Image (cartoon, rainbow, N blue to C red; front, side, top):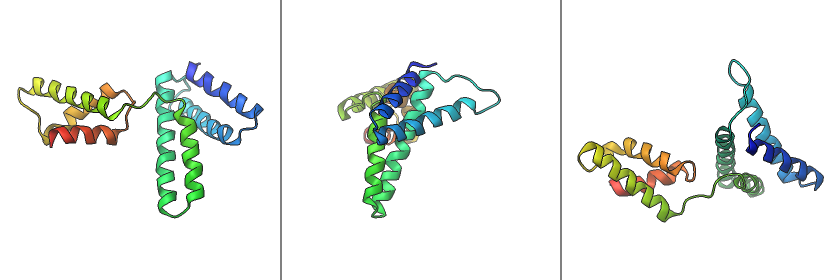
Amino acid sequence: MSTLKERLRADLTAAMKSKDELVKATLRMTLTAIGNAEVAGDEARELSDDEVLAIIRKEAKKRAESAEAFASAGREELAAQERAEGEVLARYLPAQLSDDELAEIARAAVEETAAELGERPGPRQMGQVMKRATAAAAGRADGKRIANAVRALLG
């Protein structure tokens, strides 16, 4: 069993003992999503920590999108609930990159692409630059933030 999944289960047990409904409900939903991913496909398998982290990241993104949708619809109490669940999930995600660190990663990706192409990449080569920048960020920044940093350099 992955150590991250074990940590989620241990934290769920602790939340149940302390009667923390928010953490309990959030971790149950996340563990259910992990369980569903494990049994998806032809045969059941154990997920690695990276795969579990990807599921947690996906669940956190769902919470952020839901909070935004509820807030725009004037349902602030539901938006606050979704934000709180997102904060619980954020505990398990790696620390996000600062804007300066992200700009440096984007700059390095542009330079690597320029070396490969033999010329400075333009907006048409954004996909090549994004591929490198996303790999370098390794889940520590949202795709939209990475794209904005790359676009600023290619623009």
